[in-house]
Image 1: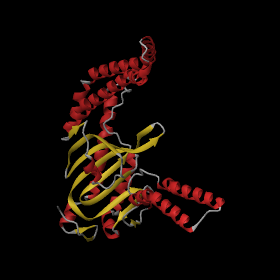
Image 2: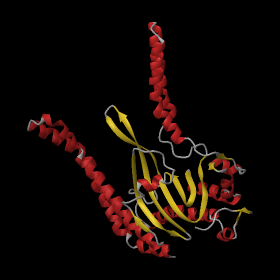
Image 3: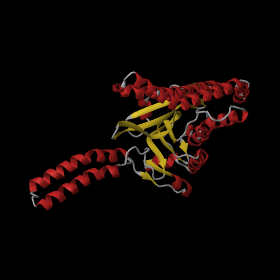
Image 4: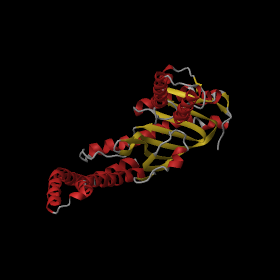
Length: 365
């Protein structure tokens, strides 16, 4: 009821937000269309003033109109998230901060993220879905890429990370990953990286053999150098390889979607038929792959491609878009709650010291 009341209150404020959205889009479009004229004017001005030696300044000045356009759009996006999402989150008892996110150290503690050269996070959401307290944010991971024009950062993963506090504990960690995807999203392509030392070794040995000058110490030197070049690739493979044994379960529908890693006994205690069914339903309703980790008194969910709070700047703000917006960013939380209720499994059974018909080592925190 609180969410519906907040949505109705927002409907009365949609008209001014819609006017601002249209106005900002017009300004941004005008700036982008004016960029060629601006560039022509700068070229004429630099020629008249004989400023040919300041070519880099000319390039920087040309970028001012599109930079201003993107700044206007970014400001509008942040404002819409604050005006729309914050009241909705408050109506559910949650705290929402658009410009903040989970810090890297906290996100890294999930064990679900691969090494990254750059980390970005925003849209911090905090609250409680009884009996589970949670923190969540959108995030993006980047790796450094060297090109002919210099170094840039390439985004290789974006998604949402949920951290949930559980009223019970797991004695050993259990990890769930999309079928065939590995324990974390792939940041590197180790197979391709291994080609570098192999090509180097092959070319070098071929050249020396044809020159008729292949001696034992030369061969050893080439092998040692190739091994050193291979070390970063081997380390990347080690970081991405599963550290725990894979668990095979009976459900065909579950096995087609997920790989499970962890202690065989503890994983089977966690992943009862009911929980497997809940995970399959969760995956199908999300429509996106996700990774999960259960350990200690916490559960983590990493969902690929989620951008829960991002309003479309090209769609008009009306009642229909507002309803779709509300449903989109609350669906994940509600589905996660249903999943955890299946995982959390009835606390009364835990209090009795039994779980799934077996003696349980888990207990209340």
